[in-house]
Image (cartoon, rainbow, N blue to C red; front, side):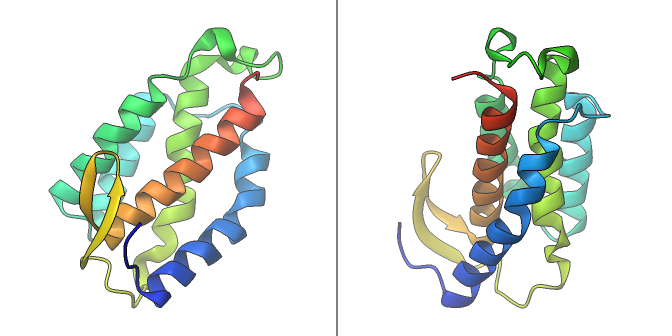
Length: 148
């Protein structure tokens, strides 16, 4: 994966552990916002917390691609009343809940790191944190809202 500073790695691990149980719990509830609203909200919040337009566009484009692969036919019986838009919106809401309390982080989130994810080989700490949070939330949603 490449070198990630110990402070950035520890921050990511702590974030994942602290938020996993709340992410899994929330995955079973219907989202109060649409996917479009959730996307607009998280994009705005990323920009407000120091993400550049490039650091926002790259992960959001890839998140959209992965979220669009979630199909309504695969929704669990428990999630069917919420519909697919709710399941998709949940993923971005979860990412925002996990990622955006990082405002006061002292880690250098703009430094480039050698890491290969989503077709890119050099990523900033911000992009890596987004990808990690996104994958945790997508996994929680798949576990709670989708079959098999």
